Length: 320
Ligand code: F6P
Image (tube, rainbow, N blue to C red; front, side):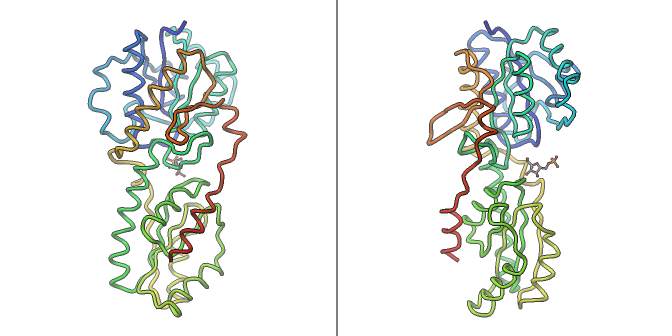
């Protein structure tokens, strides 16, 4: 029988994590279950840094970005000795189950603990939208809107000065942020891990847009880690009549008040994770597919690859 649930946020934070914490806390308390907050992700488990959360502890946090619990990346959590420290924390505080909000690294931590007998559920919280088993992750929509707002502004000034803006967005091996931001802003080029980066092709395409299509400006949205945005901008200045300028949006995409979509997604997922645990599910990841809350085993999320959204990539190209 589950009497106490722990909640932690781990990995890169994302807007909406707080909404999920609030939902978990209040949903559990409403069912007579005690909730323990864990500070700084798996680090708090290792250090026994936990505290009881009351309804009032989560007041007002639904509107706030970041995570009130703090977050961390703990690469050492793969070691059994470190995991044993976490198990001690469960025992000391009589915690029966845990809900982990985070990305794939957090899922790995939760899976490791599940294998050691801890009942865990995971909730996808990352701006990258790179988690299989759900169509959307908490924070993606807010980060996307942040990126769109920035790119809209860059478009204004790029068009006044016959410039090509190279805008680097986050995404860590997943191009969804770049793709959706590119479509939403009418970007001329979208370069992601799925499309791959081809320098020659990129320059050739921009020369066409410049010389044949006589575009007044161009926007290139590129996922992080594919190339150096500033180097590409400099090449564009040399090889086309556009003046190339680079903007790396960086961590600005991780902050800010969550959008309505993220608040609702997080709220629904948080409550669903509690319900699922009480229904006897564990080692499962929560997802949202076609508007329905679902769950699949955490292990299966690692086996599934996210489908490349080829139709969306084709659409973006058709509309330039
Ligand atoms: O996973 C979320 C994310 O923001 C990625 O988009 C990015 O590559 C990474 O985290 C940055 O991580 P850190 O906060 O550790 O620098």
